[in-house]
Each structure stands twice: as structure tokens, then as C-alpha cells.
Length: 235
Length: 235
DNA sequence: CGCTTCTTTGAATTTCGTCAAAAGGCGTGG
DNA sequence: CCACGCCTTTTGACGAAATTCAAAGAAGCG
Image 1 (cartoon, chains in turn cyan, yellow, brown, red):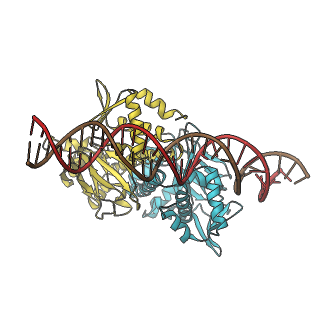
Image 2: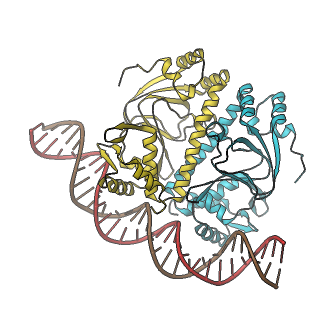
Image 3: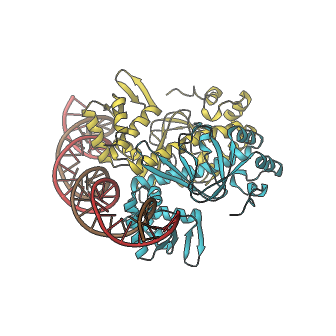
């Protein structure tokens, strides 16, 4: 990973959070950001931690997962470069509602609640961007709720794979490769099923040539076929 | 229902959306609102409709439900007096992502995207309030996702009932009564199960004296016991 | 090369959805 | 006021789907 090629104001200007801001405001954003390098598998924050900050991934990937009192967990989402996380709880709880773990070595920026609030008052556009971002996530969450409530495991896994491809897909000769390592357990926790069921489904698709996994890296070879399964009520 | 006793600026000032605004701004809010009376069971908007506006319930209750391509649906939430709805899609889609149906006769206010945007630019506090509101909803959605993915139907119904009690509970001699009519199907669509399973569970609780339903009105008689079921991993 | 972590696979069990049908409530209109 | 019809709820039986239990196989790492 490049040392700090991304620590320029240009990077922040390209984030959805800071879209349509004047250069002077971007300077302020860059100046108040705290930047940290995080090792693979390291935790950026834990569910229940106080001292909430707003975070953004500069380079790398972060997994956001919520754990219940019984230990069962769901992957809420993966955060890639330019995306924000941990910001929802800023104005609500003062406690993080989920865990954030780096999937690969990651460079991360963050702002305190006071800093972000000040930026938003000065630049209402930032607040509007935040609404935009979490609005989309709320819609996605509601879709996933419907899927979980009404569809079988196979379709949910198909949706999970497609969503990952859309969010973190990289085109290769072989198909769409998902840019970060994914364990079967991760897929299961996204789709809302068990490690075992997810394994069976993915292995079956692998045998059928719909996708391939090599070293925890998943490649979608026949997106159209997986899309068909995702929509096929008989699965 | 009172004719238009709620159409005063005071009502808007009490909404979370317009919290901490100067009186002059509240006046503007009131002036630009379009107010409508909606009959029981009438649709305020349909999933897929264009021409999105931001809505708020002044009096009554609205059910927000999302329907999949296969017809299966989930109740996303119920909106009571003072709460907003339909606002998430404002900055994202230009299309409503769900249906809104009045459960009882309802008085509803709405603003166009342009109006709300103007209000937010002038008063960034409004945008911050929106973030607060949809942030809470996103957290709730993520909790429900975890429940749907990991818990059995009994616990989910228990959570649904408790959530309803918290949101729309009215204390009576008999216990906490939920302020609006609820069909078994509604409970099922909230909990993410079928009408039949929901009926079995609720009937069993009714026999055990944990709750009562009279004329589609549900009263929670033993919240603590239902809370125990909601947390009990063995259910 | 051995250990740890992840994945695969089989079999038994359970839960819940589906199918089916009857019973109950409420309002309407005769 | 009663009877009819529609909508909602209850209940039973059955079957499919997925979780759980169990164990072995593979792959990467030190």
C-alpha cells in the first residue's frame, strides 16, 4: 500500500460525504481529520464503545458487524475506499452500535462529533450528503429485511453475492472479482444463514461454474445466472 | 377527530424534525406545508410512485410497507403523530421505495423536495434533525435484520410486540394498549413470519394471559414476561 | 512438517411455512 | 331485528427447508 498518497485534500474532495464543497471547506476537512493506519484484522471500534467519531476509509476495507446478546452476528456492510462508517451513532447514541474490523490493511480518517457538527453548520451541503448516504443505506437495509423475512437461503446468498459484486467488484478476464477476502462465514453473516448452508450453496455454484473462489477471493463468472436465482421464487 | 386544531405552528415546533428552530423558521415551515386529510385504508403513496415529497403525520397512523416483486411484504414501520415518512427517498431515488397506507383517518402534511431543501439550507439544524431521525431508523433496521437472521419466530414476534408498545403504547388499567388497530397479518409482516405462525403465537400468549386483543386492539398485560421471551435464546 | 483455521459433507432433528378448512365477528341490507 | 356475506382468525396435518450435530478433509502459516 502506498504510504500516504491518499492524504491529500483531493481525496476528500472525491468522497460522497464532501461532494460539492468549496475548496476552502475541503481544506478544513482535511485539516481536522485524524488519520490512522490499521492492520489487517485489527478492530477500529467495538460495539458499545463510547467516544464515537465519524470515520471514513481512505484505502482498504472495513467490515461492520452487529452482535446480539446471544453471540449471533450479522454483517451490516463492508466499507470501501471513500465511504463513511460509524457516523450514524454520532447523533443518536454516543455509543457504537456495531463492531468495525479491518479486513485488510487499511488507512482510515475520522472526525470528532464536534468537528463534524461544526463543518456541517458551516456547510449544510455536508449534512445533506450525509442524509443522502444514510438514506441509501436505510433503503438497502429495508430491502434486506424483506429478503430475510420472505426469501429462502439460496436467494439470499445470491443477493448477497450480487450486492458484493456491485459494491466491490473488479472486472477480470475470469469475471467480476470481489476485491477483498471473504470467508464462507462472512457470506453466511451477510445472507443471514449459517456457515454450513452458505458453504453448500456456494460449493454447488462453484461446481456449476457460476463462480470461483481461490484463496478466499470470490469471482463471479456468470452474474446473469446468479441474478436469475436471486429472482427465482422457486429457490 | 378534531377538525384542524393541529394545524398551528405550535404543532410543527413540537416535531423532532423541526426541533430547535427559531419561530420565524417554524412559520415558514407551516406556510409551505401542504396538509391533507386521508381516509382510513386510503393510500398516501405507492411504491414506485414518482414525485416524491417529504411527509409527516399530524394526527393518525400510517403503515409503511415494502412489497417485493413476488408480492411478499414487510411492514417497515408505523408512523404516528409528529413523525416523518417518505423522506428518505427524497435525495436518493425520486421514487417512493414503499407503500404508505393510513390505518385510521389521518391528517398528513407534506413538503416538496425543493421546499425542504430550501428550508434545510437556511436552517442546517433541520438537516441535522433528519440525520438524527433516519440514523435511529437505520439502527433499528439493522437490529431487525439481526433478529430476522438469527432468531426464531417466537422471539421476533415478542420483539415486534414490545417495539409497538414502546412506539404507540397507551397505559390503561389493563396494561399497555397499542393505539391503532392491528391485524394478525400486520404483526406477521412486522415480525417477518406468516399470518398463521403469528396467530398461533399470539393466541398462545393470550391464553396464558400475557396479552389481550379486542376488536383488533392489542393490550400487553405482562410486558416483563414478553420481554423474557424476546431475550430467551431457547424460544 | 505440524498446527491452526477454514471448508466440505453427511445425517438427524426441528422449525416453520403450506395446504386445508372451519369458526368467529362485524356490518349491511332486507 | 335477523340473516347473510365478507373478512379475519383459529386450528390441524403435512412436508420442505435449513439448522444442528458430527467429523473429516484442505489449505495456509510458522
